Image (cartoon, rainbow, N blue to C red):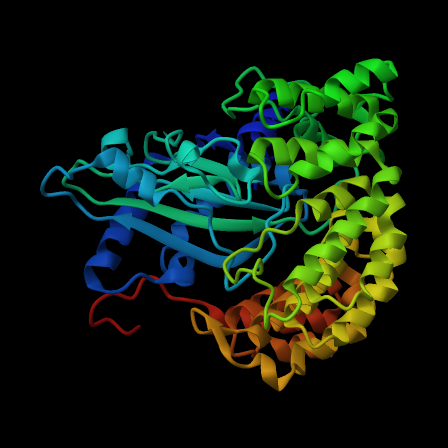
Amino acid sequence: MMKPILLTDEQMREFIVNGYVVLNPGVPDEIHATIFEKLTGMFDQGPNPGNNVLPAVPEMRHVLNSPEVRGALISLLGEDYIEHPHRYCHRVAPTIERPRGIRAKLAKNCHQDSYTPIGHSRQHLIRYARIMYYPQDTPVELGPTHVIPGTQYQSALTKEDRKRAIPVFGRAGTVSITHFDVGHAAGVSLLNQPRHMIKFVYMRLSEPIAPSWNCRSRTWRRPRNVEAPYDLNVAWSHVWDWMAGKRDRYESLGNGRRCASADAISRLIQELPRNRRLPVRLEAIRQLAWERARAAAAVPALLKVLNVDHQAVRIAATYALGAIGESVVEPLVDRLKESGRLEDGHAVPRPWDERATSMQDEAHALGAIGAPAVRALTELLECEFEWTRINAAFALGEMDSAAVDGVPALTRCLKDESHCLVRTVLDSLGAIRQRVSVSEIGRLLENGRDEWAAPLLRGWSARDQVRTNAAMACARLGEDAAPAEAALTRALDDPCGHVGAFAAYALEGIGTPTAAASVRDYLFAQRWDASLKGPHMF
């Protein structure tokens, strides 16, 4: 396998800001032609193969393993990234007549992807990435996928966003890698020929401890090509510092280098109300974030915009509150308690979405504060309100290993009757990766509550997703998942294919001879003979 070609600093900055990067892997044209021919024949003969598209057309491995694609995935997700079992070929059928209302249809197509199989929390940090690959020349007229730059930090798309969708087009072999939560849409084809786009999803296993790209400077700078419509430099620099493995995720802001006076801070606060122009408000928030703890007087005004204001203002305020730091913890916690109280009495919290859940802005802010918020969030896990506990668990996971002191309390939550909480806790324990009770996670691989068995979405039950998340957590733990080896080996036969796939990754990470043998047996049995056609059975 050839040496991966890592992303540059500028490409990383563009990804953080715009949410995508476009690659042209050096794969021979004939491979793309073969892939296109096989996919076309496959759709002519039967239904979409769904997750089985890769074994059905195994030549795509040459694209996925190309130096350019592997290098980009390493750059974004770390060297130990894994492929999610969900894959899909999106086919746009040949167009016989010119469609009407092209712009309206494109706008209607715009969306943020659901997580598979069912609900998962949207995350600003780069923990998932999506590949979109074209095996055929895909000009704009063929209806390529469009992206909406900068929307990966948003909880929803607006009419304004839908007007900003831009096509990602190119010759056969073009690959775009996007933040999983960036808005996008299938284009509208004007040509009488099929268009295939194959989607793959990849996951980060471990927190960044150093830049995994071709880093020449760890200093944050705005990229030359900014396609996002609003200045969210406070959020962008925070993500950059996390990706670079910095202990202080606000290092790029400096330590209050502006040293504004109390009067200057007061004037900035006066620029925050909704009757001010949006760019002015965002600039004021940016300058307040520079002051970090000295901007504490702005906390009440910043809190007012959370969850209810323009999404750009919400995002900027979220990370400005994170920059202000420890003094903000108590009011943020109080607001999470209040949001939980408002949701109390519902069978499932109304904000919980089995496609993808957007947590409270307060949870993102607490996660950005990091270690100073751990104790308060750990105590919040005992709150009587389910939605509050879910947000507290999510915020701890966003801190990675800085939240290690919260692991015992998170582990106790694995016995909670709320599958929404248990699923969130499993994700967070997988992100923290230290002092995790593997035996408790292994128990959930095999024993779930009976009330979790009812189908929720796409035929999946909460119990299916709990088992999937448990196997995912074990995959993130590497060798430390060894106490669950027996349960993971049995999980290879789980009726839910996602559980078996993540169990295989976990066993590979454990690395014992018995675990390796179990994975080999599993993968050899799963082998698909893509050469069989028509009446040929062997």
